[in-house]
Image (cartoon, rainbow, N blue to C red; front, side):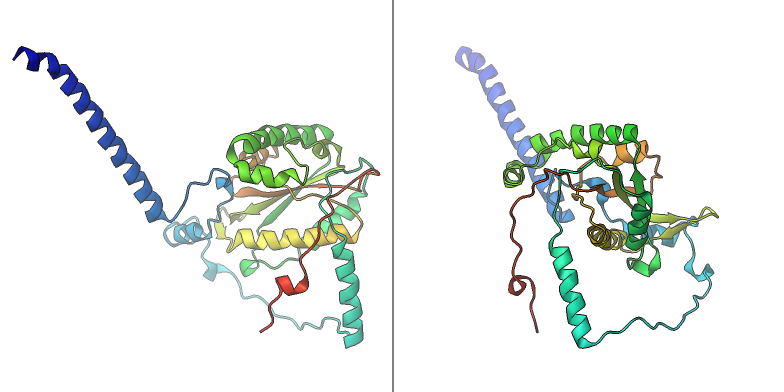
Length: 294
């Protein structure tokens, strides 16, 4: 009995360890089960602010009086459409010239502070606004920043978050893959470029009568608009680098006093290339590698 009594604390300790181990394993299994059931894998580099909530908006639309009933909208007038038409030779020549122009487009991180006419920026934004969108909701807002103080505040926000991204969120493989491009969390061009264009997607519309309007496929629509914006910038001889600073959206939205239905999709510093600008000597895939003809 004396021996058993002396061993009792040991048995209790061992039993506690076993119970703790089983409990921890149970929690792990439950966590994995939840991840599988939701179909999602933990990805710390994903910007949760950019989730496309079209489906959520549609569900809210069914049960919430705050959303616009589309039957309230008037019928849209349709008009004849007669675009310019070209001969086969002209089409080929125009397509060759446009390809040559766009093939010169590069991501440029060395931007000149030389002023750019504001009217040019206005026109490239107008051009981006010609993009197609789900149900013609035009779910985009282009915030053009030229004020030096605001640009610097944007740089501070971006660099603080980007340093965390590089050191913690993005993962070793991503950081390693970026090394050859010589990019890091220091974004001097955010101070130097004469303009910063911040493109926000509108997750839903806000109408004058207080109603909300569903913006279908808002992220895809705004992404198409960004592609047209890049082409418009290239067309006038300006350069940019597409930046998607993770987890900066809420702070930048607050700084720029944008409403809660707008989420930052992309940030573009815009200007002329610096006189000493350099870019990586990258090669593009051949046509046979990107096109399949059926």
